[in-house]
Length: 418
Image 1 (cartoon, one colour):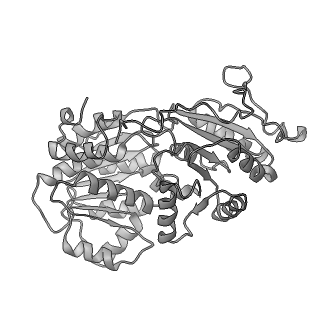
Image 2 (cartoon, one colour):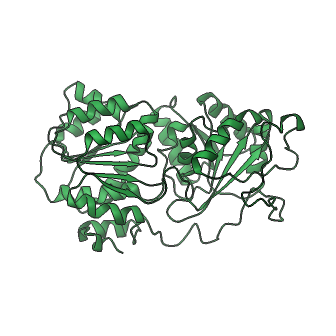
Image 3 (cartoon, one colour):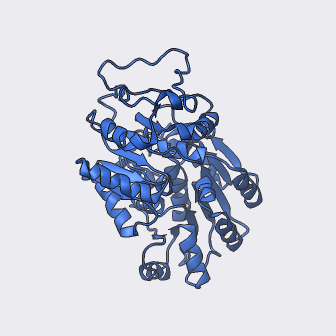
């Protein structure tokens, strides 16, 4: 299977090839022909499977073959500013040889440059729900010419409370349009919205819903809550690991943890909703360039981060919403690579851990670490459970049981998926 055999135009294939991608991923192979046909689509796939190109490539192709207007003919709605920026960057790369204009409209920055981009005219608009409604409400923008609308990470928009905004946006769109919903999970409320917003949609599901990618090696380390910082510092210092994402439940915890790790010599930044857009952009740029080796994030960023080469994801706090676990650990093992997901579980988080295991459909391997064992008085709350096979886990013999062998070639060579 190649992009030309899927029906992608040679001009776009040339840009995709320059970007370093040769072979479509499964979700791209299934979704691209459907979108090119003009059908509505529901696509359920894990993060890191190439969903963005699955809707961008056929959308750009349809735009290039239609009439140029000053108003947007395609709209992509994303839950976070980071994800919108990444979609915009990919749209620019894939449309490098096309006469198309696109713009990114997000909150946290001034409206002036966005208004100028809209006024100049554009073909593709990528936006977050709140700022998009702001422009609509102030009369800067009209959506009457939209032919294709994409709701990316639809379940995350539901989790973040954007469902009323999405309903408003749907009401502002033409009734005759192509609607594409891309999501890793499918809450009931999103399914109800899709039923009202689509006509005979095709369904693409490349993996069981809410299932982590098989290439993610998952492990839980039981630890007292008061010793989590100490354990994290110990783990990060045990091996020469690559870029690491650490997730916390609160913004305050993210800031505290960043300061703690900085004092220990790590190159750290925190990213969450209280950070300005400029600060979030600088943090991501530093993480991508290698100037920052550890990025501390809240769940706001869990679906908006797309950084190549993230080798480890650490759940410093287990999420209250089980689906967020899948979204978090999907930041590693992307585009055919492997990765490690490490969860630090305190006794009082036993309920969250059980909910996560029910969601993913299997127990997660539990490894107590020497020197950080949970006291006997707490073991009734979070027992050191055996591996799903029933056999105890054995260390890799190097005194670093949390680190697995990774292929030396995993970080290099030709990438397969977009």
